[in-house]
Amino acid sequence: MGALDVGRRGLVCFNHGPPLSRAATMLDTVLIDCPCCGEPIEIYVEPAEESHRYVEDCPVCCRPITVSVEVDADGAMRVSVGSQDDV
Image (cartoon, rainbow, N blue to C red):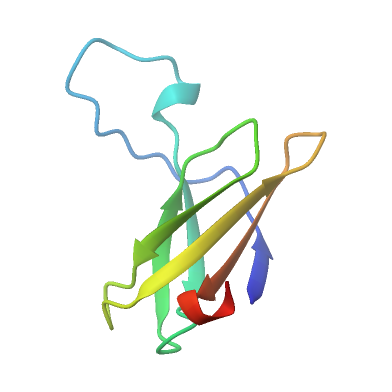
């Protein structure tokens, strides 16, 4: 599994309803290498207060990538990715 630390730099808002708080509209942009095909891709990770895991398809090879987001006590996020075979 590859891992990298995420900074608070990407802002993307897909909101078409009433205005949301600034925290609710922020997504972090993370550059990773697909664990299946090795291509560099950009994924968006929603900041959260708790650690979580989800599956996202690679836009290059269309294979599923497991994205794990770990949040420490200070709120810093660590993102790691793996293929479905790694889980």
